[in-house]
Amino acid sequence: MTQLLFILSHPPGSSIYAQEAFDAALAGSAFSNIAILFVGAGCLQLIEPKLAVEAHQRKDFQRGFRALPDYDVHDVYGCEDSFKQFGLHNQTLVIQPTLLTRVDISAHLNAAQRVLCF
Amino acid sequence: MNFALNIQGSPHTSNSLWSALNFAQACLREGHRIHRVFFYHDAVLVANTLLAPPQDEMNLTTAWQTLGQDYNLDLCLCVASCLRRGILNDSEAQRFEKTTSNLAAGFNISGLGQLIEASLVSDRVISFGA
Amino acid sequence: MMLHTFNSSDAYRLHGHRPSAEDLILLIEDGVFATTQQDLTQDKRIRVLREDLAQRGLPEPTAITCITYSDWVRLTIESQHCLSWTR
Image (cartoon, rainbow over all chains, first blue to last red; front, side, top):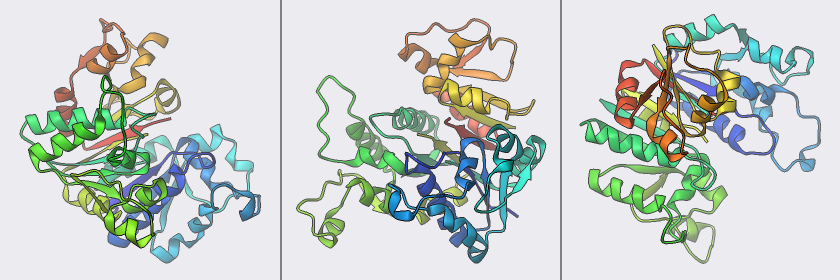
């Protein structure tokens, strides 16, 4: 059962919010059974960064997505509508989340003990 | 009911600290408890004791300090968010060899575990997004 | 039932389709500007934070339920989860 569902909706890039939100999810995984849901512009975090690390103001925190199984995080979801909206089906992604319809998302929210929005 | 608040927006470019303050006041007025107020992202900037807004402007720092004191609230800041943004208590200032600390009285600095714990033990967790 | 708060009209435009029929929508902060941009009167799920309308000099729309912070607290208790949408 999902104790904490993290909704990540910040785009990567100019602000550090996306990176910090992911840190919060990792912290959650240390204490509880968590799930992650990428929604809206948050789905853009999943696009594989194409510049060398030193060419960024921000670090490529998205590489950490690949390590999620090591943190025992297996429930990683993406919003299907947002994927369509941002054309993510044609992009190279860091990881492929399980895509959820609106109805699926409601069901997962209902089943989660707590939801943290970022 | 027991609430946990997760505040994320900057005091200068967001309303989230103000919304959360009013929400917390209403909560406590109605007889509910607030297990913890967790300040994340740019919301930690409210705990900078060096802020000196003009007299005729809202001082969010003192407003939160007053509420915290009146109700003995746990006003907890994320340490990683703080270090990035230069909010340091005495021990962090010493550890990073800075010339001064600037954590406003009434706030404390701790880790993300405090947000997770608060979320799990409270009846409701309310996020105030940036 | 879930309570979805929107703190900007962009957030409402982008995520406004998410709440299901039994959910409630609360416009706060700059989200209250949505009341001036589109006709929200047909959607009975919408609530608007009265203080944030007043702070921005906006009139209270007649056909929409305007609520106080205390009402907001009560809605959070009636809701299973409170979701905050910001952009």
